[in-house]
Length: 349
Image (cartoon, one colour):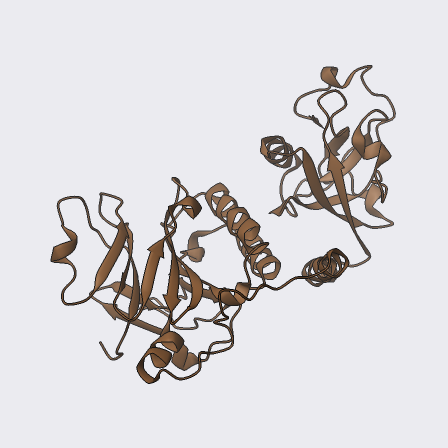
């Protein structure tokens, strides 16, 4: 290797239970790993003193190949994730992971978070790529890797809110296996015992933001994300009740070559009818609880919303004056006498 490293993360390890840790490491190196058990998968982290690493299995999903750990150096720490998404991975798996990390970032400083791994975005849908961009904005993360592989693709991510230069990120390939180095800044500090970079803050320092400031920051992110769509962006929270439901009826775009999710009816007994700010017929749903629905089929959107845990749903809506002309059906004015009688493919309970 061309770098004197203290932490290495590896994807596509191709390891299984027949290979012992002692066969992988030597000297003062330690390892944690998560094997797929068949060719092409698996992730691991290797480290050596003075670095301390503690695995955080509570953050790991059983459906994704990922490792989470707390990296500590001289009383300072960061959180590190190593993840591998195989080619042709389902969009749902990506969105579930985006949502999980987004929830973590609500309590973690993004300057103390580094995500490294192989995302294989070349095989993703356009909706997934849009979801990834939204995920970066929501979590205040940036892609710090611009290195391409032999196929001229940037498959690998080094995502963090900390400011890193090109010298801080080293990616080296050996026999087709990419080694992601996510702690060059800590390596320099370990060698010189110099002052740590500002992004590695002391453990006892906690940032507090008032609710108003946090809401304003969130609204700025939303406007930055969806501002190019134009006109008015509306954010509203709806609480689903067992008896009344959300009371929304969805429809697609009048032009069948285009996909969109419009609100075509609001049940007077549902929570949407009592929302503040008000939800209006013709509003286009862009996002619900961090899941991007912009550009999706309204039937798929209905299934996605029904699958969310709730009971509170945060809707991001696009409001346009001419939107009613794009809705596939006329606004609904008649509803079932009880929400339980609503048609399953049309209404969100």
